[in-house]
Amino acid sequence: MTIEAVVDPRRDPVPVGQHVHKVGYANRLMKKKRCKRRINKRSEAKVPMALQELYMSCREVFKGPGTVPLPDDVERLCHILDNMKPEDVGLSSELPFFKTKNAVNGTQRVTTTTIYKCDEFSLCLFFLPATAVIPLHNHPGMTVFSKLLLGTMHIKSYDWVSPPSAEEPVQPSHVRLARLVMDSDFTAPCNTSVLYPTTGGNIHQFTASTPCAVLDVLGPPYAKEDGRDCSYYKDFPYDAFSDGEKELTEEGGCVGWLEEIETPENSEMDWIEYLGPQIVEYRE
Ligand SMILES: [Fe+2]
View 1 (cartoon, rainbow, N blue to C red):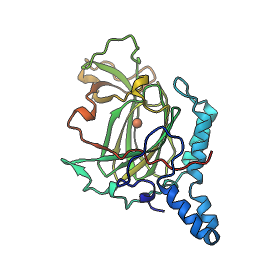
View 2 (cartoon, helix red, strand yellow):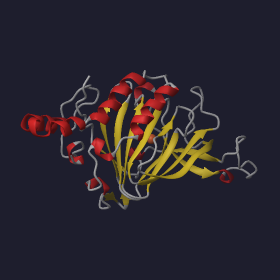
View 3 (cartoon, rainbow, N blue to C red):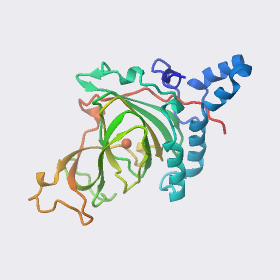
View 4 (cartoon, protein in one colour):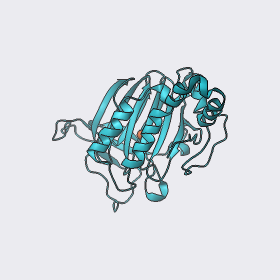
């Protein structure tokens, strides 16, 4: 199975929010089943198993906005994701998304598609050609599992030293102190990264050293109407806005300043292409 079977940019988008769609590789799989059931029954049955297992577990683990999965449930999802391979979502490094010609004004474009979305969680794939960047962004009120399926990627992440409160007036040019949580390279296959609403590096940036593919599980998904919009940031070293006396937090970690920036849609950062949801058929 090739990636085109799951993510085909030529295919018309389908509406988000429907729980079962017979699109993507599900249709092709059904056709194959009718023709070759007696010939290759065992291998066909294996194709969607990892994704199906992930979907079923997510249905049980994510309880909706305002909740965070319990430690045992986090471990359960990590175990599934840790064992997932590119083939489990039909990936191959020959995808057009990974080619360097996929650039706009010299900026390598990131491509994303949603393979499932409901009110409680979503499953999204991100494709990054080499040198592409997903800028620093947050996940308000969300728990996010990121599984690097292909490539080598640098992940930098922060948590607020003092999270902003809902009553706080919005100050667009205001910088806020953040604790550096992660600043490391990851190469697939590797374990799943998990971030939480206020810990684990909720504000993160992905920089592709080689062509990369990432599977993100977001619970709950972004929803602007529920206050879970995505904000973007630029980071500065601590001494950029201070006298340099405080370089470490109480725990010994590094700190820096984050400034909220315009969302890429409103700026010249034409870095991402949304393919629209390509939702496969899951068994209930
Ligand atoms: Fe993210």
